Structures are given as C-alpha cells and as structure tokens.
Length: 141
Image 1 (cartoon, one colour):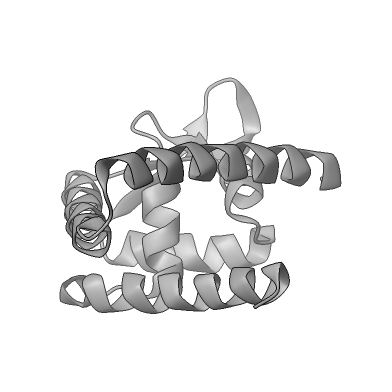
Image 2: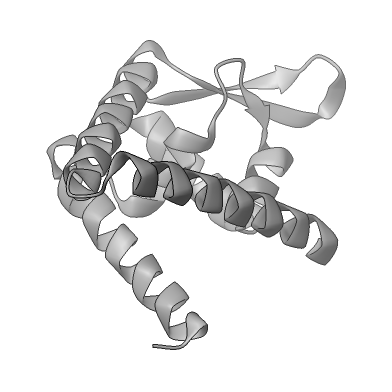
C-alpha cells in the first residue's frame, strides 16, 4: 500500500474504532471529537473551530447539540466581548473521562501484541507525525 492509501485506511479504521468503542455514550463521532478537544479551562469557539478543522457554522451546530445534552456551556469571553468561551460541564467532563478510558482500553488492546521496543518506536513516530501535522495545519491556515 502507498502512504496515501495507508493514511486513508488508518483514518477510516480509527473513526470506526472510535465509534465502536464509544457507542455506550450515544454521541456521534463529531460530538466525541469536539468534547475531547475542549481543554479543562475552556476555549473560544474560533480556537476550537481551527483546532478540529471545521467552519464556525458547523461548530456552532455541534456545540448547540452538546449544550442541549448539558455536556458543554457557553459563556462570554471577558477578554473579548465579541467571542464566546465553551466549557465542559460536570457531565461533559465525565463523558470525556469515559472517552479517554475507552481510548486507553482500545489502545492497550491493539498494542498488546507489540513488543515494548516497537511500542516505544511507534510512540516516537506518532509524536513526529503529530508534530508535522500540526506544523502543516498552521502553515495552511
């Protein structure tokens, strides 16, 4: 397989695994991504939009659904009256903890057949990939 095919297949497999491993939460993959991307101290809508790569209108719809589920709350930004801060509610934090637990369980299961050395190499390569993807995303924006 070529690298582009591998990226595509990996994305499909990871999305499928995310859905399967978090089906107990009755959240869509997009909702899981948004919840998992909100830092503990909150974030602005524009920062979140940029982080997950969706336009503001798409993010607004997602946040409204999560707000209706009482997983997030919106508040005014004290530093900029034109922007909104999104925060996790207590229920949202519990869901994020469940998502993280599910991801950790899945990761351990998938990597259980890898040697310790292979895990270390994979972690290093994934860190490099993440770093380069982040740099590329900044360059494109």
